[in-house]
Amino acid sequence: MLVLDELDRGLIHALHVDARAPFTLVADVLGSSTQTVVRRYRRLHARAGLRVVGLPTPRSSGTHQWFVRLTAATRSAHDIAVALARRPDTSWVRLTSGGTEIVAIIHTAPAGPDAHALLLRDIPRTAGITAVSAHYLLHTYLGGPTAWRGRIDALDADQVARLRAGIPTANAPDPDDPADADASVHLLTDADRLLISALREDARLSYAELAAATGTRPSTVARRLSELRARDALFFDIDIDPALLGVTVSALLWMQVAPAHLDAVATELAGHDELALVAATTGPTNLVAHALCRDAEALHHYLTRRVAWEAVTRVETAPVLRTYKAATTLRAN
Image (tube, rainbow, N blue to C red; front, side, top):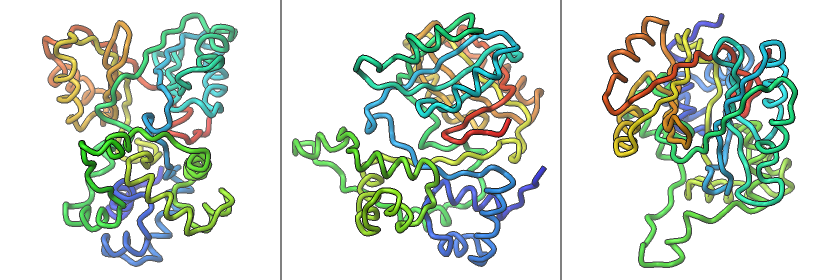
């Protein structure tokens, strides 16, 4: 397995801060040459599965997200997971719990005759599936635009500030101005969706390459991308195998928390270095977290020492055995 050094980790952290930062800037921040940084990026892309992707925020895209848990016969679970991973309306497809449960995030339209076709029609009719539970994602406390700390521990505050200086920002909205009050809920246009579709494949594409993919001009792409980033309609994510960062145990934690304490517990959990995701959902378990730990003993320590609160009345731990799809990237199987 590829072993990451300080420069590799610094590059990964830099891409989390600004996924589209020029390699010249990244190299300067890391104290390296541009040629070396480009070579390291290509090596991580080829050998570590590193992918930098652009994704719409759920609010701007107007879609809903569901955590779906499927119980399937062991002999058919793999094929079902592969089929789900290949769909454009899924992400985060994983096999858990001894190889009999598939967990996926499904993105649905808020309305329309086919809005929930996958949930209501396609999945129930699939041979081999013996049970289905769907949990509507209500609020994300950690994950998406907020990176797992295990991937952002290489740069100091000054280096992060230098990278952030180039990120487009919007002026603070005026609450008394109706136009500003509605600005944050503008949905994506067809042109925006086309641009984000290209960024979903590779967020490092040049403006010229994005223009070719969208049938526009580089200047138009640059302006539109800056606007999307400034109003937080778009965020960037990184796909990379966590095993390269020292993780050998991955598990989903399905928690039941007293509603009066849910926000406080979730906020506290979002600050834990062991977690890459914390989200409130509907269902008998109303909080889901994704733990990434060095080994089984570290996971045991985390569960017994850091999650043992009275407000958490139940924790179901489901080890992740295989990842078929991360944010957008299909994993080889």
